Structure formats: structure tokens, C-alpha cells
Length: 255
Image 1 (cartoon, rainbow, N blue to C red):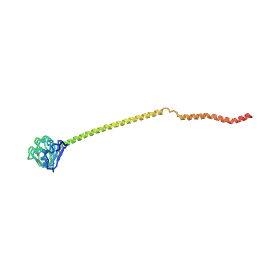
Image 2 (image 1 turned 30 degrees about the horizontal axis):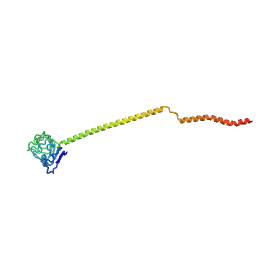
Image 3 (image 1 turned 90 degrees about the horizontal axis):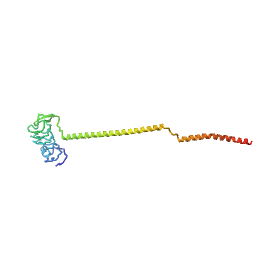
Image 4 (image 1 turned 45 degrees about the vertical axis):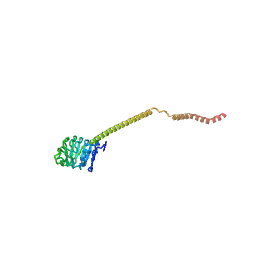
């Protein structure tokens, strides 16, 4: 019914009263299922690809787990069982060959009268909350925890994705730092070129100041004119004297 989908997690609400057979069997990426009713538990193996499910959460509306309800779930690694569950039937989780973490939040053993509940499961103990009153859980020793949680594969995947994103960010930071270094190098090169240009300008100015300057042509012309004027002054005085004496010479001549 859901062929070739990318669904990874499904939650069945407490109000669901009918689940068709094989309705989720084609969800090849499905890993986590949350069930909120005993009816959903009873329909689990017929509706879901039970041999691929890795995480099962039995929520507060679930009161019982029927006999062999999850038997043969070979990929199942984690189970959280709500304190509302008061009965677990025979061989409920038998053959779950990858099951390594189970947590129960109730206060009494719901499988006291049942057998083989965790047959062929690699469980050393069952995690229970501080208020748990019995010493065993379905025949397994218990270990006290503050609260029930499951370290799901999807969380691990998210952590891997986050780590990959961090590496990429670091890579981008490195690239950015490299670009910044290159920019600083370019700036240093430009500054060096500018200093070199300023040095050349200073040398040019020094050469210009040390070389003798050519006399201005206009000054030469002014000096020439002044010299000519000075040369003409004696002639002018001679002519004036001659003009003054000439009448006396003429008068003397006629006398």
C-alpha cells in the first residue's frame, strides 16, 4: 500500500481501530514503530515488515503484549515498554536475536506467569525505573535507570549526519581561511608594489633635485635687453652733449 516509500518512523494512535494486513509491508526504510493500543500490538506482525524494524515503543495506551507478539523480529535492537503494560505473554520477544536494550517504566513484573519471553535474545538485564518493586523482569535480572530511553538507529544516523556537517563546515572554514590568507598575500603584494613605486618616485625626485637646472630662456632675454639698454646709454648722452654744443660751434665759426 506504501510501495517504495522513504518512511522511517510510524506512530499508530490510540484511536486506530483497524489495521489492514501488509499495509506497511513495502516500507523498506521503516525502522521505528510507536504503538498506542493493545490492538495495534496484536496487528503488528501482520501489518509491518517486522523482520526489518529496529525500534519499538509501546506507549501509555498499551496494557498487554500478547503471546509471540514480537517473536522473530530479527533486526529489533531496542524496546521501550510503558508502565501501563500489566501483562506480557509467553515468548513475546523470543527469537529477537539483535535485541540488546529493553526498558520498562512500571513498578511490577508483568511477565511473572509467562515463559520464554526473551528466549534467544542477547539481553544481560532489563532496565527498570527506580520505583520498580521486583527483582527480575520476565525472568531477567534488572538494572535501575532514572528514566526509559532508546538510542535509536535514526538518532545515530542523525549524529553521523551532524558530524559530517561539522566536517564540511570545518572544511569550508579552512577554505575560507585559505582564501583570507590569499587575500592578505595579495594585499601584501599590492603594498609592496606601492612601496616600490614610492621608492622609484623618491629616487626620481632626488635625481631631479641633484641635476643642475637649465637657465630660463625668458631670463636670458631680459638680461640681453638690459645689456643692450646699458650699452645704448653712453651714445645717448654723447648725442645730447653734441646737440647742446653744436650751436656754440656754429656761432663761433661765423664770428
